[in-house]
Amino acid sequence: MSVDLRGRTCVVTGSAKSIGLGIAEMYLGLGAKVAMIDIDPEVTLQAEALAGGGASVRGYVLDITDQEAVMACFEDIAGKLGDVFALANVAGAVDQQPIDEITPERLDRMNRININGSVWCAQGALRTMRKHKDGRIINFSSKSGKTGSAIMAAYSGAKGAIISVTQAMAFELAKDNIKVNCLCPGIVEKTGVWGAVSKGYVENLKMAEDAVVKQFTAKVPLGRLCRIEDVVAFVKFLTIDGDYCTGQAFNLTGGREMH
Ligand SMILES: NC(=O)c1ccc[n+]([C@@H]2O[C@H](COP(=O)([O-])OP(=O)(O)OC[C@H]3O[C@@H](n4cnc5c(N)ncnc54)[C@H](O)[C@@H]3O)[C@@H](O)[C@H]2O)c1
Image (cartoon, rainbow, N blue to C red; front, top):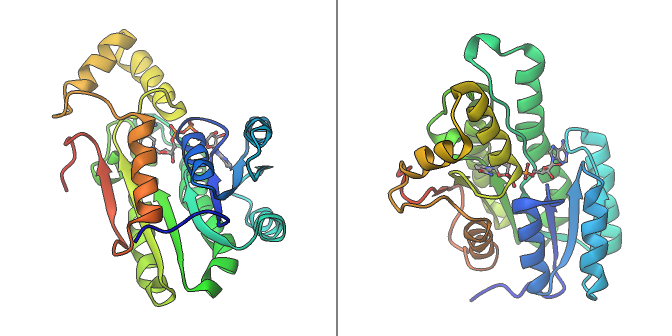
C-alpha cells in the first residue's frame, strides 16, 4: 500500500532549482511538509512562493559540506516541521577537466559536495527518522557513477562512491526499516548540471551546442534525453511505493546504461 505523505516531513537538498525543486513540488502536492535546502539563497524565495499557495514548506540556506551546520539545520527542521520521513539528497555539483589537470582542490570539492554532503544530510535526517523505524533516503549518483565519463574523472569518482555509500547505508539501516537507494540519471534536460556539462563540451570539443545535444541523444536507445519529470516520478515511487527496494542504484538513462 502506498505511504500517505500527508503531514509527514520530507527534506530535499539542492531544491533552489531543477530536479530538487521538482521533487519538493511533488512532495508538497502529496500533502507532505517540506524542508527545502540549498546553498543558493534563491531557495528561500522558492519556498516562500510555494508557501503562498498554503503549503507547509520552509527554505533553508545551507552549505551541506559543513557538518555542524547541517546538524543544526536538521534540528531546526525537526522542531519546526517534525521528524523526517524522507530525505532526497539531490544537491550536487559537476566539474570537467582532463585527468592531468585535476588539482587537489577540485578533486576535494567534488568529494565534499557530492559524497560528504550526502552523508552529513543522512546523519541529520537519521537523528529523527530512525526512532520511527520507517523512512526513505534517496541519494543522487549518475550514469557517470556506473560508467565513468571522459574529462569527468573527479565527478565520476564521487558519483561512483555514492553507489557504495548507498549500499552500505542500506545494509546498516535495514534493521530500522529505512530504505536507502540512489538514482543514476543520464543527461537531464533543463538542469544546472547538464547546462555546465554541455557548456564544457562546447568549449573542450569545439562543437556547437545543438551538435552536442544531438550527439548525446543519439546514444540513448529511447531516443530522447531524460526530463526532470522522469526523475521526479521515480523519486515519488521510491518514497511512497518502493517498500521492498533498498540498496539499489537505478538507471534513468533511456536504456543507455543497463547494469
Ligand atoms: N542534470 C543532469 O543531467 C544529471 C545527471 C546525472 C546526475 N545528476 C545529479 O542530480 C542532482 C541534481 O542535478 P541538477 O542538474 O538538478 O543540479 P543543479 O545544478 O541544477 O542543482 C543543484 C543544486 O544543488 C545546490 N548545491 C550545490 N552545492 C551545494 C552545497 N554545497 N550545499 C547546498 N546546496 C548545494 C546548487 O545551488 C543547486 O541549486 C545532482 O546531484 C547531480 O549530480 C544530474
